Amino acid sequence: MLSAQNDTPKLASRLIWTGLGAVSILFHLGLIFSGLIPNLVSRPLHLALALPWALVMVAKNPTERLIGIILSLLGLAATLYIVAYQDVLGDQYGYLEGNLQIVVSVVLILIVLEMTRRAIGWPMPLVALIALAYGLWGSHLPGEFGHPGMPLESFLGTLTITEGGLWGKLTGVSVNIVAIFVIFGAVLNSGEAGQGFMNVATAAAGRLKGGAAKVSVLSSALFGSISGSASANVASTGAITLPAMTRLGYPRAFAGAVEAVASSGGQIMPPLMGAGAFVMVELTGVPYTSIILAALLPAILYFATVWCGINAFAGRHNLSGLNSADTPTLHTVAITSAFFLIPFTVLLVGMFWAGYTPQYAASLSILAGAVLLFIDGKLSFDWKRTLLRFETVCVTAGKQIAMIAAIILCASLIIGVLGMTGLGIKLTSFILAGSNGMLWPALLLTAIACLILGMEVPTTAAYVICISVAGPALNQLGVPLLQAHLFVFWFALLSTITPPVCGAVFIAAGLVQENWLKVALYAMSLGIGLYLVPLAMIANPALVGLEDTPGDALLSFAQVGLGLFAISYGVISKKAALLRLFLILAGGLILFGLPLL
Image: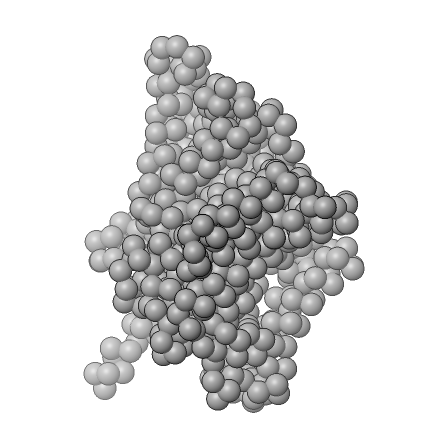
């Protein structure tokens, strides 16, 4: 009896969170099929649905939970006020009228900052607070970094009752596109698709030299594209690949590095690229299909360089492949691969053949994936298992939509202040002046900024902030729009494997119980493509031109690949020092200077 009483609150909690997740899923899918909904309705409701997940579910103690509930109720009231009066607010042109609107505005900003703090920690909210302080008091700064100032009502109003701050284009991406693909990922990950990824990778590469490491590369490339998070990728695929590598005697630091590097690359691998591709669509105006075609060859080069590095390490450590008993049968591979191939086929056919928008095609893929949740790899059906899978979908989707919403809303505040005060233009001028108008020093400054921002800010947020500042400078120096965005997006990933803060490395090191610095050193050598491919995209513009000039793109792909393999082998192998130095220098010349004959 006591056990049943203890289980009742847990059951009630599960039902509440499952219900909230289901509401979030239905709302975001409903927007795809409901026609035009005013932005000052859909975007505030997006925030309202994220409130309990970002403020209550993540609470670490009862006091924090109580504060989260109070803040959620305040935030709900503020967002519903925006929705109820969106017609009137639209006629105010960003100027608040009356104390009530000022209170609503302040509440919205503070709640977004607290949501982001609870979701990812202090660094990003601190950047937003500094930006807000600059907007409020920057007029008192002397010199070129001051601004003319503006009334409080205009400053807060532009951020909260127009589409220039919280409800801007980035939030629109979160509402209309990112949320849909988060749901898609949740559906795939709650069924057999993850095991399907692993089985395909194991069958393809498991028996090769260094096979367990190569399985990690392939599975992480497949899974990471939909997970959108290097850390989540390490934790999920790493739970399978890391024990396999250590069991075969792979050095623990090397095993952790393979998983960290492979998982980081998932965010640059088409067709989904986490959330970054969809944000890039909005910021550049370039069609989604053009972006993933431009990103495809560089992503393949990244994973090919990791593969080459594994071969070099295999020569040093005599790394064996998996035993035949540990590899799945062809029958198992064929069945389990269908759990991700069917939804992905629906997605790609919808986008490339039927001409649907990415979000509409993804909605159809979600339906296909949801049907597959009813069966397992043995084609058996079980009601209890199916209900648990749908519960997982609801909770996972609700939580991830809220986390991304908090990040993007906070980034929208920062972008809004940069635009209102002209600070973005001033920082762009600073980059141009600091580089003395030269391209490569400007790229170096941009890379350093991406690394610093990315240390504690998720990849997508670091990319958004950096491109807002550095993008115009790179464009002025002759870098085409899409190249500049891809360059910044790649370098926003640097902090996943680069000390002092390297999230993917920390998680992998914990899973293999190895010193994180050893793992980081292996990861930086294995993942050398992450540092070089973005530079190669600038030095060889044809590399991102697969859509328009496929022949030139493939020639550039071969040239850059040859240079990367030479550098990777020179860095990792144990050959004579003079030979290694020659390989590195020759690789650099091929990569950046010597034309392919």
